[in-house]
Every structure is written in C-alpha cells, then in structure tokens.
Amino acid sequence: IAEAELEAASKSVSVERLRARPAVSASLGVRRFQEYDTEAFTFGINVSLPLFDRNKGAISAARAEERAAAARLTTAKLQTQANRSAAQARLDASITRIRAADKGVASAEEAYQLARAGFDAGRISQLELRSIRSALISARNTAVNARLARVRAEVELAGLDDRAPF
Image (cartoon, rainbow, N blue to C red):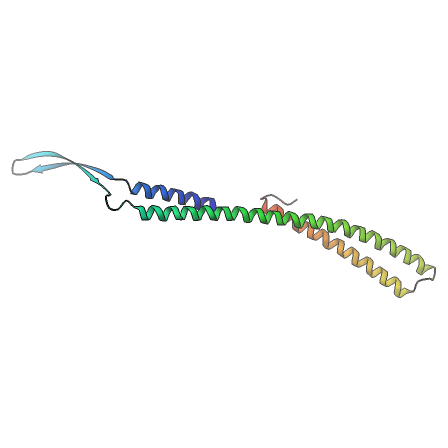
C-alpha cells in the first residue's frame, strides 16, 4: 500500500508540474455570413501564460506529500523487518526451550523410574512417588508448551514471509 501511495504522490507531482506549463489550445470552425451568402473558415490559437501563478503552491504540496509517502514506505519496510526479526527470535528461543524441556523430561523420567524402583523396594513412600510423578507430568507439560510455542512462531514467521507454514 505504501508503495502505491508513493507512486501516486510521484504522479501527482508530475501532474502539478504540467499544470504550471502554458496551456495551448487551438480552435477551427466554419462561419456563415447570411448577408453575403458566403461561408468562411475560422482558426484560432489560445495561449495562456502563467506569469503570476506558476502553480508553485500545488507543486510544493505535491512534493511534500511525496516525501511523506516515501517516509511511510520506509517506516513500513522497517516495521516489517522488525516484525520478521522478532518472529525469528521467538522461533529460535522456542527451539532452545524445546531442547531444555526435552532434557528436563529425560531427567524427570529417570527420577521417576528410580523412585518407582525405590517404592517397589519399600524405601520411598507413596507420597514421595506421587511428588516425583507430578514433577514428571509438569516436565512433559513444559515440553508440550515449548513445542506449541515453536509452532506458533513458525506460523507467524510464515505469515510474514507470505508462505505456507508447513
């Protein structure tokens, strides 16, 4: 949209410059004189010279609009670039969180297996086993949430790149 606005503003400057040029018009016609019963061809040229009004105000306004449109285009490009960089950073962070969460799940599963063996041997109470199992469930939930965040970041980045996410 910003590119179209800039193009329209540039065209507007061109139009206003053309309006400052002298306007030339020509006319051609036929005239009938009834008293002599004759016809005559008429020809006329009209040239308007812009001596006092060279359309400078409109040209200046069009140039200002062109500069504003260029600034809006630059802002839009920078905003798009910033959005893309932020989305890429979120994707990278979510991938790092997935790796950390997977290590946490592996540790929690190992702790649960050891606790289960300890419970079966009668060395750990059921309350402690449940606490360790709760930590395992929490670690798995964290891993799922990290994967969900990665998918959301991929979808956002794909939307900014105008492509299908998967």
